[in-house]
Image 1 (cartoon, one colour):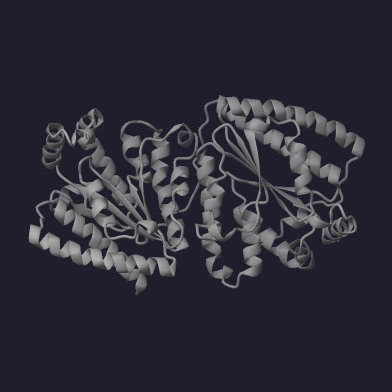
Image 2 (cartoon, rainbow, N blue to C red):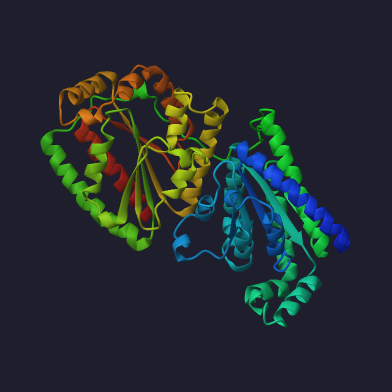
Amino acid sequence: MKNVLENVDLKVEIKKKESKLLIENLQNDLMVLQQQMKELKIPMLILFEGWDGSGKGVCINKLVNQLDTRAYTVYSIQPADEAEKRKPVMWRYWQKVPVYGKISIFDESWYQEIAWAEFEEEDFEENRIERYEQIKAFERQLADDGYVLVKLFLHISQEEQKKRQDEQLHDRATTWQVTRRDQKQNRNYEKFFKIFDSMIQRTHTEYAPWYLISAEDDYYGKVQFMRIIRDVMQKAIDQKRQGQHRIDWVVPNRFDLMPIPRLNEVNLEISLSDEAYKEEKGDAGKRLAELHNYLYQKKIPLIVLYEGWDASGKGGNIRRLTQSLDPRGYRVIPTVAPDYVEKNHHYLWRFWRDLPKTGHIAIFDRTWYGRVMVERVENLCREDEWKRAYREINEFEATLDDWGAIIVKFWIQIDQEEQLRRFNDRQNNPDKQWKITEEDWRNREKWPLYEEAINEMLQKTHTNYAPWTIIEGNDKKYARVKAMRTIIKAIEQRMD
C-alpha cells in the first residue's frame, strides 16, 4: 500500500494575522451552522486524532469558542480502566454517542486505542481484522442513522514533535503535559507512522472519511480543520433539508447463515408430565448453579435473549431460570417502548448500555429484535431502516462473540388457539388482568404480518455464533426445561 501520510505537505504556512481573521469568520460560521444542526436534529461526532503534540487540544479550544455549550460535549479519551476492560472494546464509545442534534467531540478516540494495541499487544495480528471490522461497523451504523462523522488526523514530523515536547518539558507550567507515552511515541515515530498510515487506509470510507491536516504550522492547521468542519456541516444541513436519508453503502456480507425451520413447521404437541418436569427442572437448576460459578471464575459473559408471542410465557420462563442463579451475578432487562432519550439515539444504543461485565449474565425480556418485528409491522421506522437492521444486528452479535460472550437466543412459539386461551384466562382472572392490554388484542389481529416478519428475522439472523433456539411453548413446563437445557449446553460447549 502506498503511504497516504507522505502526501501531506508539511511545509505549507499561513501568516498569523491572516489566520486570525479567517478563524474569527469560521467561528461565526460554525456558531450559525451548529444552531441549524440542532434545529434539524442532525447529530455529529468530531474526532481529533494525530500525533501527540500536534495541537489537538488547542484546536478543540478554538472549535468550541463560539459554540453553544449546551449542545456539545468534549471527551478526552484515556486508556481503558479496569471496569471498561470488562466490557466490549466499543462499549465505552457507544456511551458517548450524542443525542440527535448534539455534537460529541473526541480528543483522541477508538483510533488511538487500536494504534497503541497494535504497538503493544503481541496477539494484535490475530485480532486485526475483527477490530477494524468492529470500528467500520460502528461508524457505518451511525452514518446510516443520520450521524455525521468527521475524522481529523493532525500530522507533524518527528523533528517537530520532539521540538514541541522539549519546549513543554523546559517550562514548569507545561511539563506535566508530556507523558512517558508521548515520548515513547516520538522514539518509535517510524513504527507509529506505519501504524497510523495503515489505520487510515483501512478505515477511510465513504460514510466516515479521513481528513489529513498539516499541523506543522500551527496557524495553517487551525484554519484547515475549521474549514473542513464548516463544509461538512453545511453539506449535512443541505442534504437533510432536501430529504436525503442515506446512501446505500456497498458492504460485503461477512455472515454465514444456517437453515432454521419456519414457525408453521414447529411441533407444538410436545409436553412434559408434572413428575418429569419436577425432576428435570431440579437437575437442570443444580447444573446451572454450578455453571454460573464457572462463568464468574472464568470471566465469561452470558447474554440470554427472550422473544416470543404475547402470552408465550417469557416471564415465567425467566423466573424459573433465575431461581438457579446467584442474584449478585445476573440482571434481567425488560425492554419496553423507548423513552425520549432512547428515541433520540441509534436504536442499538440502549442495548449497548445494558451489556453485562465479564463473568455476569444479562437476560433480556424482549430485545433489539423489536426493530425487525414490532417496528416493522407497526411502521415505527422506515423500510430501509428495518431492512438494514438484519446486518446491523449480526454485526452487533459478532462483536459480542469476538468479546467472548456466550449468546443464547430464544423464540417461544405458541399457536393462535393457545394464545387465545391464555388471553381469556388473564382477562377473567383479577390477579392476572394487569398482564393483558388492548394492544395485546390488537397485535393478535396482525398475526400473519408478525409471523412473516418473525420468519424472516429467524432466517436472516440465525448464525453459528448466535443461533436461535425455537422453543415449543404450548406446554409451559416443557418450554422452561428446554430453555434451561439449552443454556447448559451452550456453556458446556464453551468449557470444551
